[in-house]
Length: 115
Length: 110
Image 1: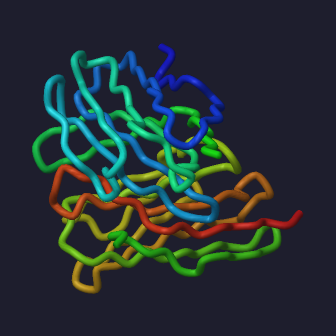
Image 2 (image 1 turned 180 degrees about the horizontal axis):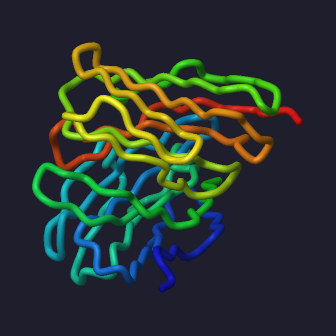
């Protein structure tokens, strides 16, 4: 199993450009999520999904869109990049039953710089 | 605002010593998890403790949970240089959102 994969590993964007960060998992996990991590900080939840066709906002959703058309894939779209979105982005997946979280599996991250 | 806050923010110890870090959270939870992050890498799950558990062990790790004080502690016994990393707690706040704390940076000197 590849686990959770993210592409690209690095990306530089100009202000105003748009792009999609890809995330895929091969563990048949229902729950997937996106976090951003700024230098010296913890992770902040951007968006999450409890299953195909279902997404919801996390702590810092502004400027980002997600969709979940399949169980395996959970892409994150930056609509119009801003320097404040310079960060490391992590995707994660896990099993989840109602009211119970299980171990989160994290991807290796995408380092995004917006100039 | 973040659900969990770790204390201390940074901790430096010698190999062989024990390392203790604490996590405080704001709202009721179903479970609490601890993760490790090596520099520049993704997070790795260490241990999960449910709200009806008070203590859990995994190898050199010991986690306690006090729901009345809304706090948890992670103890790493007999630390090794390879334990150098950042450690984060994560809680669900009884929702579909898993929220991470601010982390403790642990440095273990040989």
